[in-house]
Length: 367
Image (cartoon, rainbow, N blue to C red; front, side, top):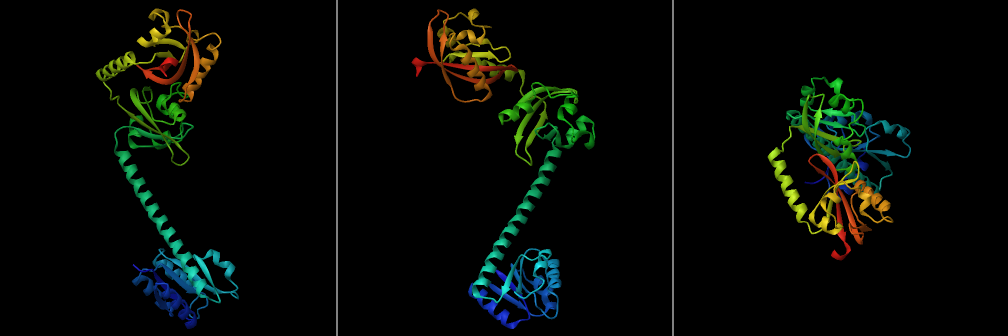
């Protein structure tokens, strides 16, 4: 489909020159010399660019622009003026995309059209995107409001920004009683954020966090899934729902975990991150550390390393738990007093609702 251009002018020389240049460039050109016919032209045909001569005798160009814009905004207006035109500084208040200053040349006309068409493309794309976003927003809100589970958004300061209808119904509160308030005040009836808040963990890790929490404000225990999101300003999406994992499923998962844990080819320790004591060790760990279970369980982590390495090893493990990834080399002191070189990798892990750390000990001779 050809690009359509309308030229509105009573200057025949101007019209002839502009038409010749534009048609040579392959554009479809329509001319109008009578201001009263402008409205019929723009109603009968869709134009991409409209050239309007600022020096028409029968009508003020401002009125012509108003007529064009009343019919459609989906076109770019180029105002043809002259060096001697005294009111050019006032054009900023008029809906004009660009200006074509006389005396006209072929290059001036071609450049004006290229700029105008580029702006038309941008404007149409912006309108299309705005329409798409608006539609998507309405669909999202309608969909979220239809969900029976409470869903709400907070900023990184824990202020509630938005909530679906189910949230208000379950809380038995109005919009003004929820929006703008701290989520821990509304859902937990607390003055401060929970110590083990999944939202706080999601902010720290940048990943989805799920936990089962007792919500005093809802008078029930629910699973809380928190998703970090990059919307305006950033924040967190919270989805509350009934716990979906049965005790049977949890038991099966633990059995699988324990089997993989014990059959691992590398020594693995489980560490309680609250007091940094060993709470479990797999078979390979007992062999590598040359300790019986009763001599390794509940032992302080620092006692597993040589005196020269214990402080730095514990510090490195804490650093790994806060910033996952990487490893470090250290020296282990086994139950027989023998020093062994190994690499350490530490990961956070939740087992039976306990916050633990999984310590992989990789002996040098395995590498």
